[in-house]
Image (cartoon, rainbow, N blue to C red; front, top):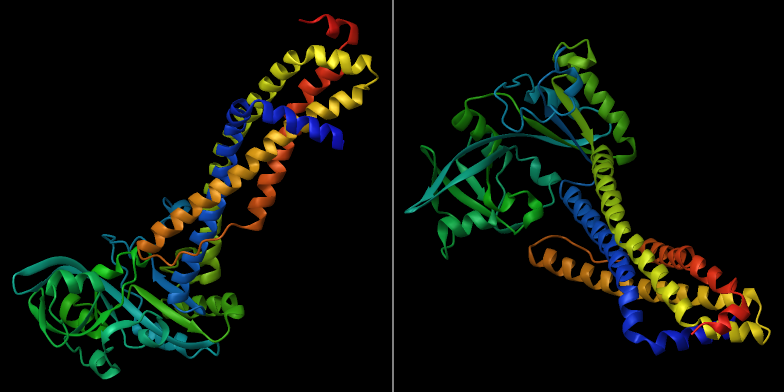
Amino acid sequence: MFKAFQQSIKALKANPVRTILTTLGIVIGIATVILVLSAGAGFRSLIDSELGAWGTNSLFVETRVPPTTKNRASSVASADFSRAGSAVAITTFKQRDLDAIKKLGNVVNNYGIVTGMGVASYRNNAKSIIYYGQSAERFSIDKHTLKSGRFWTIAEDSGAAQVVILGSNLAKDLFNQDDPLGKLLRIGNLNFQVIGVYNVQGSAGGGADDMLYIPLGTAQKKMLGVDYLLVGVVELKDANSAAATAEQIRQIMRQNHNITDPAKDDFTVTTQAETMDTFNTIFNGITILLICIASISLIVGGVGIMNIMYVVVTERTAEIGLKKALGAKNADILSEFLVEAVLVTVLGGILGILFGAFMGWVVSLIAVASGLSWVFSVPVSAIILAVSVSGTIGIGFGVFPARTAARMDPIEALRYE
């Protein structure tokens, strides 16, 4: 076997250009697999970071349009309908629901959210914005931090104070280089005093850098004229009991909303584990699709290796005949050409791992530069997969040319010119 290895190295060195071109398909395919899995690991770290910003022990209560007989099959897709701007307003989710939920043994705290759209202006600068009304309890749950200023208080929330905290981009757009703290900006027909500016949250914040935040009472009473909520965020003592707590919350909501049929719920309760499960299902599907696409390159590369190995066998027919005449066995010839095919694919696999890891690193640099909490890594499983696949392709596509070489008749081979 060692001799076959030496002969294969010699043969590959004799035709470096052909060796490089032969491995190219394998390099591209393996690099794509490594890039997909590396980017996937980075994206998972991003999702973990974003969920962590809400608090690692949080779950979410959201309004939804109850499914009817006609649309019940699509009820899951409708879960966020009202939150996304439905023409049908769900007005049953009230502060009393959150107050009842807060009494549960596994609940530490919670807060409600409403949202609206308007125009924010300061002097000659104006911008269309999305604003969030949130109760002061948010600040003990949400982990996003302020660049400057302070959070509003419970008293300011209950008193419908006209104070505002700005996203980082919005502060720049409206105030340019001026310090916004203490200044008044106009939202619709009301003046608000800026009391804080958030740190940059980046693209992962879902546009949070371009939004502004006001007390829940202010948004409900003075901006929207409503007394209901769209979303509730609940902080838990024990995340391991999230599923049981979520079921308790559903029971409270149904009792408060006089719902006897769970299929007619006008709300959804989602734990972070369920959110991650949904994300993982979607992401794993996309990953499998991309790997299948990359596999096409691997198959094409494998066919290319098989064709080249047939050419090599043809070129070395006389050499094969001479070796067999001198006593070489079929197994010796088979192993020599099979080792050569495996070496080509393993070389392509190694180059593919290095190139894919480099591209994954470039992606991480771009993501970090865009303000994302992206961690670069190349999963060990990806490397094992790459090496295994490349070796398998070498054996699978190299065995036929190698077997052809091993079965040659030495007399006929010696006559080949």
